[in-house]
Each structure stands twice: as C-alpha cells, then as structure tokens.
Image (cartoon, rainbow, N blue to C red; front, side, top):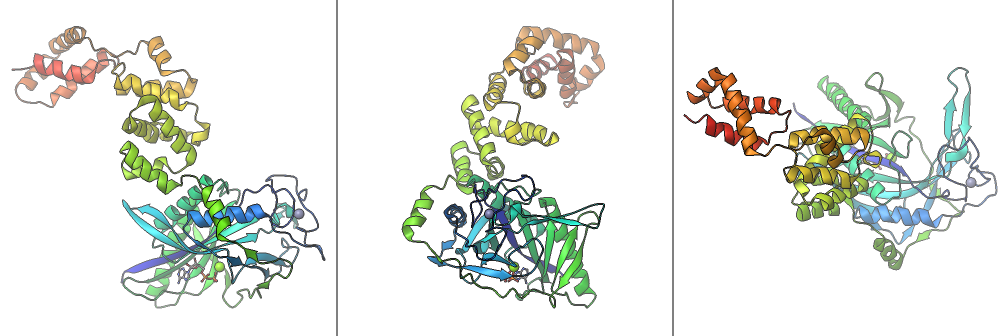
Length: 476
Ligand code: ADP
Ligand code: MG
Ligand code: ZN
C-alpha cells in the first residue's frame, strides 16, 4: 500500500521589540542571567501586566503579510501549567480569540507553486530558560526570557512532505526577516517549530492519528525528524498496529524520535481570559496604518525580478530569499547592466564561495559594484569567463579590484587574430597525428586543439576566436 504524509506546523517567532510584552524590561539576548527582570515578568503577586503596543503592531504586520484576517477583538488568556521556568504558574497567550486567522503563504516546490494555509496567528509571552549543570545534579533558571514577546503561527494540515515543510518554514522566516520583526535565528531559539505529522493511505480523505515532534533546531533537523517519523508511522501501520497520539522528541545524535509523553498525560491547561488585561480592539484605521508600513515582500520582489530582469522563477526565488541578497544582486545589476550574468555570478560563484566559508551575504568581502566591474570585463571581452573565475577568487581573498588584478597579472584576453594564428600554426605542427585525424573527420578533436591553445596562452586566448582559427587552418 502507498501512504501519504499530512503535516501541520506550529511556529514560534520571537519579536524584535526593545522591551518585553507586559513590562518595560529589555529583551536583549545574551545578558547576564536574571539581569533583565522585574516584579511583573518574575510573576510576583499583585503586579499588573500592561500590553506593549509594538508587539501588536509587529504581529499585525505578519498577519497582513500572510493574508490573514485580523480580528477586531482579541483576548489574552491564561494557559495554566507548572514548570520551574514559568514563575506565575501560567503563560499569557491567546486561545479562543486570537489576533488573526485564516491566511496563507506560497511555496515553490518541484518547479510549481503551492499555497499552505494558516489557521491562526496569536501573541503570547515566552517562558524562562533552564540551564542544567553538566557536572553537578543542579539546574539553574534564567528569567531574562520570561515575557519576551512571541507570535505563534499555526499552519493548516496542508503540508505533504518534509521538503514542503522546510520550504514553508524558509518562506515564513524570510517574510519575518523582510518585515524586520524577528531575526529568525533557529540555533538561538528565536524561530522554533513543532511539527504535527500523520500518515494515511494514498487517496484516503480521513486524517490518520498524529504525533507531535519537538526539539528540532535547524531546517536539517526538521527535515530528518519528519522523514524518520513518517517512515516509523508507516511501519507501525504495515505491522497492523495503530499510531499512538503522543509528543515525541527528535534525537539528532541518534537520528530517531522518542516518546516524551502520551495523550493520557496531555495537559489540560484550563484556559480562561486573563482578568488583568483588557481585550485588544483593532479598528480598520489601525490596520491600514500598519499596511502602509509593509515593505516589498519576498513574493512581490520575486515577481518583479522575473518581469524586470527576465530571470527564471528559480533564480528569482533564491535571489529574493533575503532582503540583503536581493539588494546585493540589484546593486550588481546596476553596475554591469546584465541581469542574467549578474544572477549567474551571484548564485553560483558568490553564494558557493560564501557557503564554503559559512558566511552570509552581509559578510561578503566583495562589494556588489566590484563584482559588477568583473562582469563587465568579461562581457566586453577584456578577459575570458574562465580567467574571470581566477580573478574572482583573488578578489575574494585580497579585496583587490578586478581591473587591478587583470593589469597586475597580465590577464588581458588575447584577441589579436595574428598572434593567435601564429600560435595555432605551431600547435598544429607539433601535433601532426591529431591534425590528420581531424581532417579525416574526427571533428571533436577541435576541443583538443583549443585546449592546447589555452595551455599555451595560460587561458588568455579568446576561445571563440581560437575555435574559428583552428577550423580555418585545419580545413581539408
Ligand atoms: P492542538 O490544539 O492539539 O495544538 P490543533 O488542532 O490546533 O491541535 O492543531 C495543531 C496543528 O496540528 C496544526 O498545525 C494542524 O494543522 C495540525 N494537525 C491537526 N491534525 C493533524 C493530523 N491528523 N495530521 C497532521 N497534522 C495535524
Ligand atoms: Mg498546539
Ligand atoms: Zn520585567
């Protein structure tokens, strides 16, 4: 029997406000433990939370960017549970009346587009952090993170494979970064994801029983955990057993998911409206005000790149994956006026090289204008594309300009037909056997001769010209 996976993701994104959601403590990451705390975020009795308006502004931006309906009336609720990182004994979240509902984002998958629905986006506060001593049986608690604002984005069960899940997460993260409301750092936990997954016989309408996966802190973990869990559930069904609804933890070192808690122990959070906070009322004026602040978003930029620069959708998708990369690309284009060349050089040479060094575009040692200059040297025929790659490497290493490097190393392309013809003649004389065979019809030997020419000129011969000369000289 063939099976199909059904996946729904719950994403938590930490918002980049300066202060916490219900008090004025700083949200800065990496401060000494328990230095950004006050009676409100420590959950002392009798204190009153006050909502940070910027949190609502940021959450509304995400809601609009993902085509959600913003509710005119939403309510904060207490989600009650005990844990040492939660001093109040409850988390302030939203439950029955979330900020926004019913949106979607588009992903590019197998050369096509697919919409993934969003059930809801709500605001809530983060909990503190437990630090377990690696040597002693002691745990510490750092409350700097309690009260840091989060939005939770819950997808519809529209995702059908680990690849789609990763594409969806990357798109969400890209939108959050374009909006400058979340830094999207998965390792530091400012962008986190829980995955609900089930399998069903292909063609069946009814969803199977799901498990919830936690503890994945990179895209690779999400991909591997889902692939493992889908296989595991299929084997369970194949053996005639049933999948148990439970929460499972991903163990990256062992490459398996393990049961953490079953449904029987599932929490009953006893949600109820927080009596200390008034409902959030949002009128259409406020929504319009926020809509005016939205920048060009990844999908819009992508469409513009396809139209304005005649790029294939795949190139446009990669180049708009971050605002900084898109900006870099456009600066290269204005320097060299050749979008397709700019896209090739940025996507293969530059991103490949940066990737080797685990750097991103903001740490790129070559300025976009400098890369544009290199491309112009190639399009004008001053240097060959092949030499261009050597020059690129040296630019990357030394920061020198393409023109400087070409001058200093004498890399200017040889386009003087007389000079090349002379060299070609010598090559033919020293390879009489190959010349004979070529004339007898073995035409692919042309490549051999051009190769010799490149060797002789250290790659400086103009390849089209070399081709033409050999064809003429070796004609019958
Ligand atoms: P809960 O209240 O337990 O968190 P929800 O109904 O809010 O459950 O759903 C949480 C997530 O689980 C959503 O992303 C949803 O798309 C997903 N989901 C629901 N049912 C299934 C299923 N059978 N298989 C996979 N994912 C599911
Ligand atoms: Mg849930
Ligand atoms: Zn505080």
